[in-house]
Amino acid sequence: MNRSLGVGRLLIAIYGIFALSASARALFQIATKFDEAPLAYSLSAISALVYVFATFALARSGDAWRRRATFAVWFELIGVVSVGGFSLFLPELFDHPSVWSGFGAGYAFIPLLLPVLGLIWLRRQSA
Image (tube, rainbow, N blue to C red):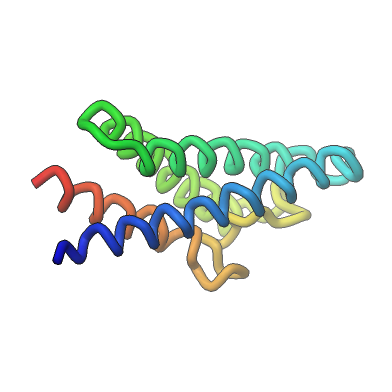
């Protein structure tokens, strides 16, 4: 029995949940209160797009899709680290925190851990 298949399905399901929740959150924020925090809400929209693309790419098979998934997950990790760092060192930019603020501290650091686990899984799949 291939255990990595189960882990892969779980990873895709988690990304799918993040894609749905981030999309709904971003649409609500942009539609109702974009003027309050345009930077944070724009980042929410970008994160939604990244999660949707990563979910789709992870669910597909083949080397080309694995490369696309790897790119999306790296992009996500760089975003989490960048926004996390900026939110710590320049908190005035984030009057209204985003999911990635503080490296995802308000979300049990899942936004930071998820791409790390995704990259580990992708690396093992390519070996």
